[in-house]
Structures are given as C-alpha cells and as structure tokens.
Length: 111
Image (cartoon, rainbow, N blue to C red):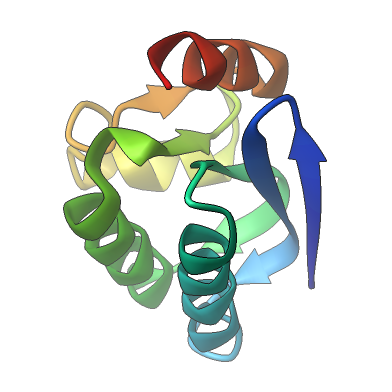
C-alpha cells in the first residue's frame, strides 16, 4: 500500500496501487505521522499509483492545507492519475511535481 523512506531531508511516502476510500485514511495517518515525527518536508509519490478517487484528492488537499510548502506531491505528467488532477483543476493548487528526484531536490532547496 505505502512505503515510507528518507531522501535527503524529506520523508517520501510512495503510494502503490490505488488511492481510494479503502486507503486514504492510512495515507492521512502516514502523512500526519511523518509531519510529527520528523518535522521535515514530506513528498507523496503517486508514481506507482494506478487510481485516485475523490477521497484521495480530499486527503491530499487537507494535507496541503495543513502543511503548505512542506508537502510536495509527485504525479507523472501523463496517465489516468494526472488526468483526475487536471479534470478537477487541482494541478496548480496542489503544486504537483512530475518527477520524484526533482521534488526531493526542490524540497531540500526550500527547506
């Protein structure tokens, strides 16, 4: 479901498979735990995510609202997951990154 790792000074939470009603509570807890445990920047990677529904968008919006620039979200430029962010016009609001390495570098530079 999720893997959590450290890259530079960022906690990276990688979502595998789907981000939907069955998994969003776990993601929310993982983000909250990373925010409290490390105080560092958090990168949520949806590179290996196959599907994201409205509940997934809600948990990411709530995290962004709470963490602001401490949170980066990685979504590949093409694919069905990127498309849901485009259709809901959330690409700018959530400040999506296209690449995990660039998100980690950006997080380190702004941290």
